[in-house]
Amino acid sequence: MNALDKEEFRIKLEEINKLVQDKDYKGAMNIVDSIDWRRVKNVRTLCVVGEIYAANGRYEDSKEIFLLAYQASIGKNILYRLIEISLRMDDINEAEEFFEEYKQVASNDSTQYILQYKIARAKNSSLNEQIRILEEYKEQEFTEKWSYELAALYYKAGEKQKCLDLCNEIILWFSEGKYVMKAYDLKMRMGELTGAEKAKFEKQFVPKLLTPEQAKELEKKKTETEVKAQEEPEAEEVEETTENNEPEVQVSMEGIKEKISKGIRDVFGGKTQEEKEEFRGRYHQGR
Image (cartoon, rainbow, N blue to C red; front, side):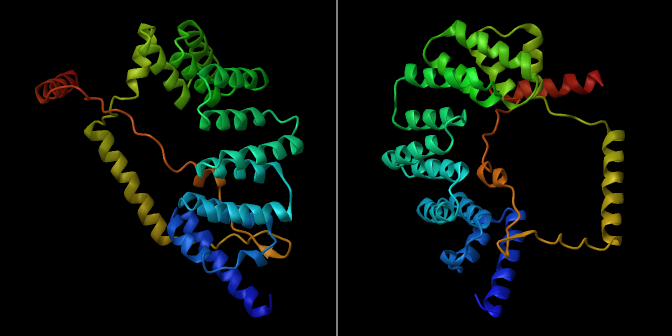
C-alpha cells in the first residue's frame, strides 16, 4: 500500500470499529465490502471481518476471509470458525475436512469434542452417539452450557434419572445463571422441582415493581447522570494497538457471535384478563 492507501485504510478501519461498537453490523459490512482484504495480512483484523460477514449471514464471504487468515497463520481458532461456518452452509464434508486438520493442530484440546458433537448433530446422528460425545467431553471439562446440552439429550432419549442427576449437579455447582434456570425448567418438565427450587425458578418471571419513592429516586439519579455527561468532554478514542504495521479492529468476537437470544415466557402467560387484574389487586393491597 502507498501512503494514501494506508491512510484511507486506517480511516475505514476506524469507521468499522465505531459501527461494530454501536452493534451496527450491517453498516460495518458495507464498509468491509469496499476493501480488498487479499492485501491485508493482519490475522486478527481478518478474523473480525470474517465475524462481521457471519453476523450478516454472508457465510461464503466469511469463509473466504477466514481462509485468508488461515493462510497467513495456521491456528486452531481459525479452523474452529471455518468448521462452524461450513456447518452453517450445510457443507458437512468440508466441515469434517477442517475438523481433521483441527485434530492435528490441537490434538490435546478438549474443544474437539464440541466440534465433533456439532458435526454429529448436523449429520442427524443418533441420540446415543451425540450423548456419547458429550459424556466424553464432560469427563474432560464440566461447563454449564454443554452439561445442560447433555442433560437435554438425556431428556430426549427418555433417560430421566440421568437427566435429573445432571440437572442437580449443574444447580449445585453453578447456582445461578442462564443454564441453571434451564436445568430448573427440565426438572419442572419431569415433575421433580422442589418447593424452594420452584420459588426460585418462578421468581425470574415476576416483574420487579418499584414503590413511588424508589421510582422517584431512580429518576433523580438518571437526571443527575445526564447532566454530568453533558458537562464533561467526550473521552478521546483509545489509541489502537497494531500488529504487522496495520491497525486492528477492536471488537469482542463473542459480542458478534452471540447477538441473538431467545425470549422467556410472560409472567401472566396462560392467565385470563380477569386473573391478571386480580393479581395486580392483591399486589397493591399487600403494599
